[in-house]
Each structure stands twice: as structure tokens, then as C-alpha cells.
Image 1: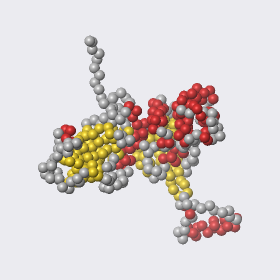
Image 2: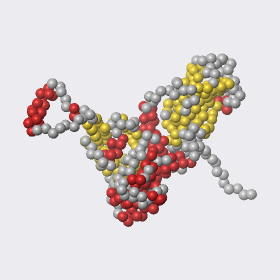
Image 3: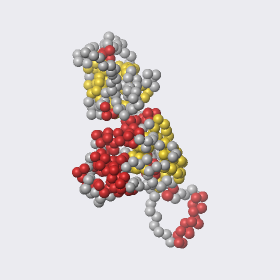
Image 4: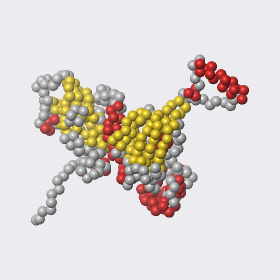
Length: 423
């Protein structure tokens, strides 16, 4: 068996845009149009049909068996078109695709489901479409139903299912019927947070079992947790391929056209000094957009000094919060006995964290400045009411060979376990 699961060579998909429906012509009209075409070309006239869009243009890559590959990019980059071609839903305009193994796909809510059939009947229908025998589906049936949590509605036509129930059952079928290649588009966002976590865990299990996963998502944390490699598509072109963390970093760094959130946010404090920016760096000073569990990181706070005096003692701080805005930890400079005085008109304050104690997830950061005291007794100078997003991806934090740490809570702490001692 070839070690290659998916091979894509010079793949292109073209769509016509803005083309109007042409009415039927008589034979005479067709002949006249054909004979006059060379003259129109010489005059520089073009047919409206030449207004085309290449959703994919000369895309080539290979995926080995057992790899989990993320496909990322902005809306309209060609991600879903690529999966539709791989699923044989859409025919490519040029190029070729080679698939070595049975393919299971989950591209849209309820793809492959018949609305008039019950959940039970659709499980067997989807299994048959995948080429599985009835007995083979029966062995997996209870596991599929338990995963989807749809026992009560198993004999109800799926046209009465909610979108969340559709997704749960469709994903359970696609993941448990053991395709060698699993294609998943951004449909998991329909499910609740707990089910999304179950899906990521199941896709991780699928990859570790030696099967292949291609996963389209805008959730960079999910891509970082699940995938070891990633593809970056931009306007139909494959612009980067490599390790997931590297590709995600490039994507986020190129996507930084958003306005500085500190420019127009609400603030509390005297305003004698204002925070102007927050970003993250490595110890060597390289700016980064994705942080890694257990790795060193430097929090860099930009400021503008408006009216602080030379003898004022300034304490800078930042706090990290969950996506629900629940605080995880706070770091003030005065915690380490550090106050800043005689600050220039503008500059940066850096705080180095030697080992980031956060599990993979999306977080946010707030900054604050107090003067001549601590956080309780000092004067409030600046407290921007803005949360700066921060993405953390997984690493082998505990040295056990695994990086799927998102279900272990937000904080990671190492401990030294001592041998048993007697009384």
C-alpha cells in the first residue's frame, strides 16, 4: 500500500461569474456569430463568458496516511472548493486528484442525509454509500448513537432534527464508519462547546489510528491541537505548506490589518500615561502571533507618557482571561518589586514568562497601570477596557508524547512526584 493517502497535482477549478443565460439561437444566428468572432477579437471585444473566477489555481500537495492536515485561509480562499473536489462532489477544471482509501466527508449540515428517513435509516444509508456491509455498520451502530446523543430521536425523520442534532449524527456516522480518509469542513461550529471538544478528540483518535484527516477551520486553536501539518490558501493559490504552528503563525501575521484596539477603547484612570499596544515576542525579540504551551514568551506593552513626573513610581500589569472573560492570572511589575520611574515619552515594557502555563485554547489579555502604590492603594493611571485576543497551541508539555491538553483545564503545572516513604 502506498504511503500517500492524497495526491493533488496542478489542481484548478474555474467558475463563471456574472454570465447571463443565453437564449436559444437559430442555425443562421449561430453561423453568423461564428463567422464574425475573428473580427470581434481583432477589435478587442470579449464575450461576457470570459469573466471567470479561479477558485483554485495550480494547487499541488501530498498527504501521507495517518497525517492530520489543517486547511486554513480567509473566506473565499478556496478551502471548501478543495474539499468538494476531494469528495468528488465537484469536478475540477484541470489537474488531477488521487485518493488511496475509502473517503468519508462532512462538508455541510446533513450532507448525505435523506430528510424523510429516520436517524436509524440514515446511519445505514450513509454506511452503504461509504461501501460498508450491513453487518459492519451494525457493529458500530450503538457507538455511533451514543456519541451523537440522539437515542430518543433515533426513529424520528431527520427533517425534524435541529441543526445541532444533524451535525452530531452526521459527524458520528462519518467518524465511526472507519473511512481511511476523513474530510471535515467548518461544520463543528454548529455544535455546542462540549460536542466540539468530543469531535476534536475523536478526530485526534482517528489520526492516531493511522487514518488521514483533512480539516478546514477558522479556529486556529483547533487546527493547532489536531493537525501536525497545514496548508494555507490565499485567493485560490497554495501559498504555504508545512508544520501547523508555522503556517498558522504566517496566516495570523499576514492577517493583522485590524485596527489597534487601544486607539478608540474606553479607559479608566487619570490618563497621565496611556497603553498604546500589546504584542508577544520570543526571547530573541521575534514577534509572534501564536503562543505555545510551556514555551517562553515575552509580553510587550507599548505606552505613551503624557504627564508622569520623574519621581512617580509606575507599576505595569497584564491579566489573562478565558474566552468567557474569567481571569486566570494577573502579573503586576510590583509583584516582583519592580517600579518604573523617569519614563521617556514613549516606549515598551517587557515581561518575560519563562514557561507559559496555559493549555491550548483562545484567551484574551487586559493591561493596567497604577502609580505610587500597589493595585489596591495606588492611583489608577490607565485601564483600557479592551481584551486583546491570544491564541495558545499545544506542545508536548509533560514530555509524554501528547499535545492534546485542552480538556485538562486552562492551567498547566509541573509537579515532582516523590517515591513512597514509610511512616
